Image 1 (cartoon, rainbow, N blue to C red):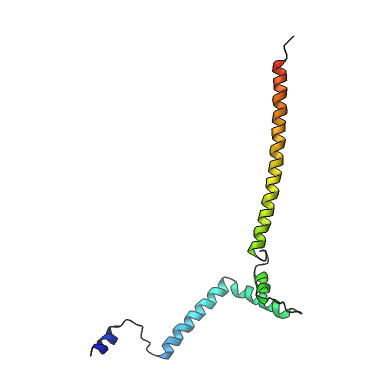
Image 2: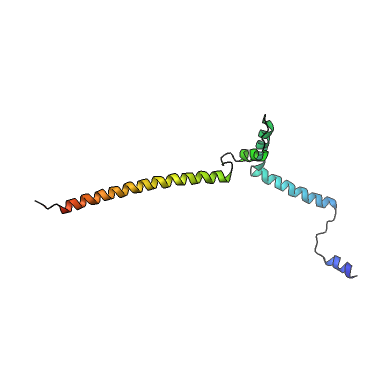
Length: 123
């Protein structure tokens, strides 16, 4: 009797039939498919896979190939993009240091000229 009470009070979902369960799963699948279609994922995946299929020579790394086709604007790896960013930052630092040195020398020359003008007695 205690076992029957436990089963009747248990809150696990009860499937009335296989058909009800299958319908719920099918509707979730359809909802997800519509989501992928609406967001453009299905179209991009299809293009990438068709491109892979049409390749004369199959690439060694099919996943990398598909990734590159899914987002061709992005560098192949995040480490490569970070290296590019770092290189650009180093170039910018060098340019700014050069500009800073030029401005310092201009300021020094301007200061020397002002000192010379102040030091000259008026006639």
